[in-house]
Image (cartoon, rainbow, N blue to C red; front, side, top):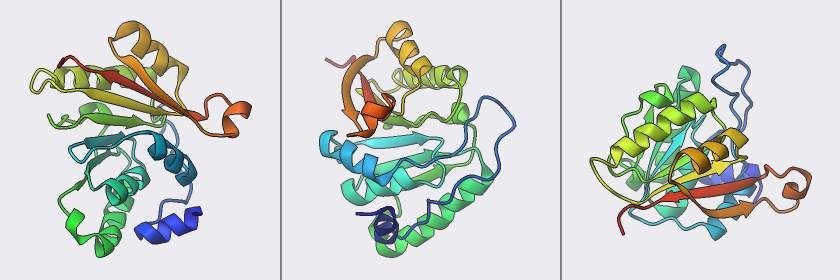
Length: 204
């Protein structure tokens, strides 16, 4: 399926590029994960009905609508940009025309990522290089603190992963590399064209 096919299927609009940029060096420009990459990821990566997935720097919400449509799970998007947040709300209204039963499964929060109060059921966290390593570290701390309220397996999904993110997870935390999904031919031209998944499970 093409990008246009997916947009029609989900009844959303997420393709237009970002025109304005945040002044802080801590935040990166918006770019949606390609649908073709999502197709490949979810042929190899399992999503369970009990999962609650958070996308940090969700932009216009593409990933979350995709996941909810195909896996019928709870999703939350954190977006600091007011315009993108409004796009998420508009896309939600359009999406729910065809997905009325998902009304209580989709949530968007307009705030800085590090301020998000992690729900004790949130267990999978997605990052497409939305911000600096300093903010990423704060979020990992928030995730670990949430385990004190509900000890559960946690997974971190990185697309086009930052070397800083990987170094921090592997040297400063107890997260373990769980899997990797390379984006076909793109990976051989650019080794960052991949997903990496890290897992932390203190429950066994």
